[in-house]
Amino acid sequence: DSGVTQTPKHLITATGQRVTLRCSPRSGDLSVYWYQQSLDQGLQFLIQYYNGEERAKGNILERFSAQQFPDLHSELNLSSLELGDSALYFCASSVGASGGVDTQYFGPGTRLTVL
Amino acid sequence: AQKVTQAQTEISVVEKEDVTLDCVYETRDTTYYLFWYKQPPSGELVFLIRRNSFDEQNEISGRYSWNFQKSTSSFNFTITASQVVDSAVYFCALNSGGYQKVTFGIGTKLQVIP
Image (cartoon, rainbow over all chains, first blue to last red; front, side, top):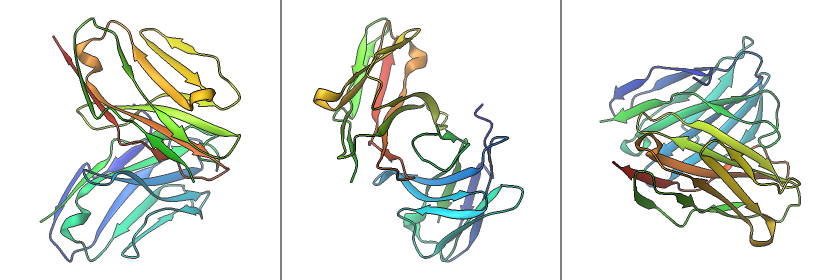
């Protein structure tokens, strides 16, 4: 158990809908990262927040947004969902802001299925 | 730019055999960090090791060992006396240049047959 929690574990929804994925980092970690894992794209970095501020952006679609709250939990919002958004979404956390100096510990993931 | 290549997409071994998973990376930076993660069938990503570019010492942890060679830009992972529980997808990853993002390879699926 990495100490990173993600809810829900599974999510099934329809095209065009909007969903929110939630992540709680390990105690003491200030950074939260979001990744998408799909069969065709592999594991792709989406976005990072550090202590409430956006720190780095990866291959995140405009239909997706995220935020980190004062208690450091984070939410990833996915809207106007398409079939291709079906994937495993991981949250990771680390102590500091650097993606390399600090090891990222991953949550169990949320499996999103868009029908 | 940073890139990670895991040329072996799938490997099958018989239990108790040794197996090496290859990882080749590309970066122009002199300071970088390399990682290995394990993703068992249950789906979670488990951190195995982090190595920085200034530490070329090989590391051994139980049946796991890692061989870091800057000369060939490789960071290979060996499992000795493999067990069925080692069956998983293994990802090599790289962070360099002070960027926040970590770039993952496509993963190597290891199947250990009893």
